[in-house]
Image 1 (cartoon, rainbow, N blue to C red):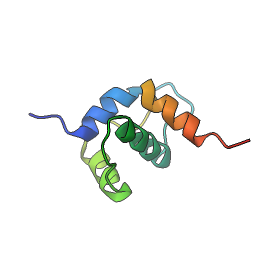
Image 2: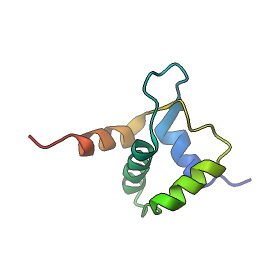
Image 3: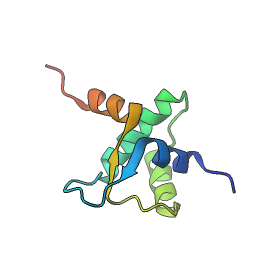
Image 4: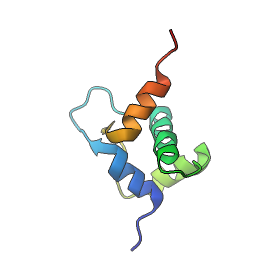
Length: 82
């Protein structure tokens, strides 16, 4: 079965972390997804499409943390200008 780009995103940009005190919320997860898409030259799907896809994924999206280049991009893009 082919892997969806949503599953590829979860695999490349997140890692399970059940011991985290601060799991990724839906808004942060979508922001990370948009960073991942931009780094891969893809247009992000709308938020509602993304959330529906995350709901359908076999991967448990709760208790995950960011990793990789998309995480760095998201963190830097989220940092307030000084």
